[in-house]
Image 1 (tube, rainbow, N blue to C red):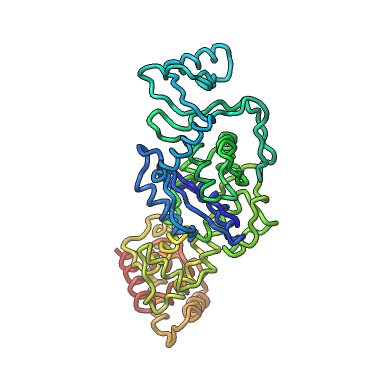
Image 2 (cartoon, one colour):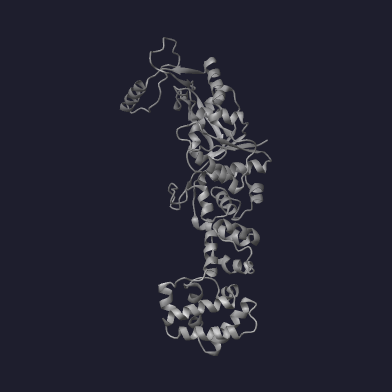
Length: 462
């Protein structure tokens, strides 16, 4: 059975790089009918945040990536880590190091002066003397002194380093708290992981974790280290570029399906296909197809995808989602027409709400630039005549009925469309942008159209 995991630290928000890694892990587990587990790496008690933890869980709920079983919290597993530390001490595979901070600093200065790589020199590796007074020891694991540390990464290929590149690193601090690379190896084994998909910033943590695996006789999972997401200029992604809290995307009106589709294409592809349903992602995703090189964040692509998902979404579901953004048109008699009139002009749910409100809200003022352009010459006279023509029309049951009245008025008076269209649009919406005038008038109805036009005439004549 394939078992994967995502293991964030609750010291900050979940950003899209983390969500992409989680998505890859989730898809691979789902494709193989395996398990996707969630582990919270909260051993850093001083930096942990309940808000950050809640935001991580909330983000998973929002995008619909369910995890299997209970969440594993490292902070509740210190007794497990202590058991393995004691095992390694008993077997002579780890030892107590009494080197003081001052000694360690002096060693580093000496190595730097010789232009050597700074590293622990193993002075307490085989120590059997009397421990120095006043020094609480750390626990170090015995790293191999020769040979190679090698593993086949599913993305990068063979990774091989000299064993001498890794010193006897600390697995437990002086206060007894275990260190990152030690607890990760323990947890990945005890959780039964077969596959670890993570960012390539962890690539050179893997040799240290291998040493823990080998010392304890654990079987290693298969590793896939995924290249980072860069900004559109190919540099490190910043908060300004999009490395923001995943839940900010919800606030901005992005659909979770669109965000996941966007993320799966950052570093993975299936031919030239751009749009994937969740089921297609599960069916097609394989981590062996993850790109070796970094991918670039592209906001335009995300917006394009989101607009497409909005257009294809079931209308009732879309209307229900708009309630989260302060707009309820579920009981409006022309709700489908409202969506039809606005959906092509919006890339996000926030923009869609704005476009709908532009129609439904009576203008309280007129945009200065638009009104100066539109409310000039015979604008007042044209609006009065047009409203009279609308009122004289027997049937105004479709947008086409309104369109026909506009066409007939312009034809009869030998006017270009702008002569009527510009002042009418500003009268109805307060500005020069928005949906089609025939659709707007049909949604508003004759009485509201007449009221808004009469207000505009009053404004022009005043």
